[in-house]
Amino acid sequence: MIKKIILILMIFLSFNSITAKECTIVCPTESIAIIEDEKLINKITGLNFLSKKIAEVIIEKELKEELTSKFNASLELFSIKRLKKGEFKSLTLTCKQLAYKALRMSNFYAQTVCPYNKIVYSNNKIFFPHDLAFKFKSTITNSDIEGIIKSYQFQRELKKCTFTFNGVKGFEIKTPVVKIKNGKMFFSIPVETFIFSEPFYINLSTDIEVKNNNIVLKNITFLSKNNIIKNDIFAPLINKINPLYYQINSIDTKYCKIYITNVKIEDNIISTEGIFIINQNYGKPNE
Image 1 (cartoon, rainbow, N blue to C red):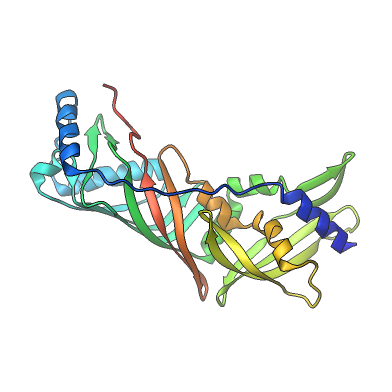
Image 2: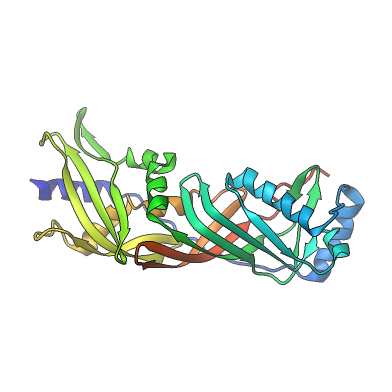
């Protein structure tokens, strides 16, 4: 009976598809940026960055408002004169605990990719005349996993994992317990059905990989003697309740987006690498 329920689960949850995303970085040229800057200066006042530190504080404030997390910003300058125009060599961002919607990351470190960058400061807001691209590194801990699972975005999707027929609930997947341990991710997934008074549990371990800009599960191994179904067929179902999938999609907003390029489980944490982009024209001042 349990095997039949799992087959229905697999069919029901496998209709959702994962869309591939591509990341393209185009660095601005200095000559073009300076021409654009000269036009903007004629229209915008308030570009008096008084010092490197003040500029960093302004950036930190902007990020905290948008991403609800505390960042530390560090600028590498061409000169103070050029900083007053919003031009700088590079920007480094660090954040001990990045928490935004379903996104949870620890020890976030990011540095701009391009050798020339520019921002405009007007009316106490920052305007980005071009995409501001960063390479980043971070970790995902068990505490981060718990935060993802408790998030509104994950719980909303989990509620969709219910099958009802003629008003009778056939099955419902409840909140899973997920742990990173000894280089693996371990899942304990409770499933409630109308047949049994108590939920039964699907227990498994898994590796992870990056596919179509999502952290997906691979090499699923059931923690029982009898596998319910072949791993390559069962993987799409388990990935529908993979907490790592929802955190990446939650940061694809009008303000920024994130691309994952590499992940690796190391003991009890997940190491991640990727590209973080603050979108062009976000916060554009009125002309």
